[in-house]
Length: 149
Ligand code: V0V
Ligand code: CO
Image (cartoon, rainbow, N blue to C red; front, side, top):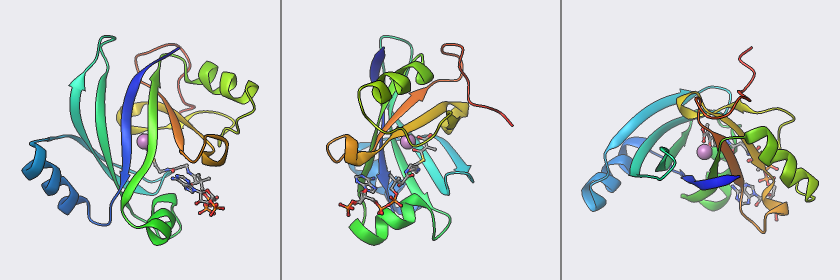
């Protein structure tokens, strides 16, 4: 079951400038920062609110660390803006399979590492009416973690 919007991913050219924009304009503070080498990003999570299931909703600001990364390619083509929407679930494997069964392409055969040690997969934007869709399972939810090797 998908229980919430976990985060909206936003592609930015300069992480510090975007963080400052959200702080000055809306008062959002940085909750967590991380470099994800596999995804080619430096990121900041801005916590917006807690939710009924004990999770939270965030804005995820993403700056590329490599020219060949998905975020770099997106910025080159579209400029800064909304990059993906991430739905929270306690079962990323099951929800990914359900989407695949419905005819949607998953980008990875197994979940990969997301922020906070979460397990993530993505659904192809061309199969989701133009939205790159992420499925995210918090580290302590469910039993299907990302492969740690
Ligand atoms: C590409 N397209 C998009 C899109 N990216 N449409 C909507 N939203 C996006 N973000 C469209 C693009 O305009 C093309 O349409 C078509 O898809 C093919 O795109 P492309 O530019 O040729 O790029 P590809 O095919 O090389 O790569 C696209 C995909 C790639 C989605 C496969 O970006 C990818 O693997 N993304 C998953 C990983 C990722 O995004 N990581 C960064 C976030 P036309 O022109 O053909 O019509 S990491 C993260 O969120 C973490 C760590 C976390 O939450 O914990
Ligand atoms: Co994300």
